[in-house]
Image: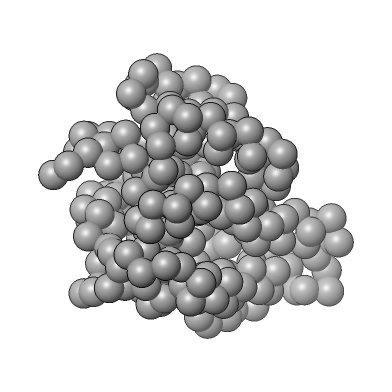
Length: 230
């Protein structure tokens, strides 16, 4: 398999970190960002220098612009762009979610994705090549109590990505992706002890990484779930 350039947000932990390891082990070059300086340093020590990780807050458009500029200079246009970074609100009825917490969820889960697209996708469009995967959720296609802000942002990912898919030139794809239910910090925040009933991120990545590498133009605009036929 030809080595690909893969950009991933939210690599500090969970799915982002597990995907990073999986792609690198298969010989691909990963450029990633996260908010934890310790985790980013650790990833650079583990996977550098071919792969490169930086501390970036995706809600900061200027910071994303500088990161994208650095990545594009370093490795060129990404073959695969994975908007994985996300937050979930603490379990609460919508009327009890503080305005600041609601804004933070929206800023990371929607505006952060738009910032990354704004600064990486023009290079991909110029090449008419590459796949953009915006992480949605089962809660981007259904709902549950006490996670209304999160549901709202993941439903937004479905609409945003499908509209983006209609704007791309032939040869590219944008896909809203439900990763499935995985035992991560985020799931433990919402499911509590029941999260133990689901596979961890590393186990998930063994299936997800090769599956993700199989996505292409034929999947443009489709709402997909990791592992299903496509």
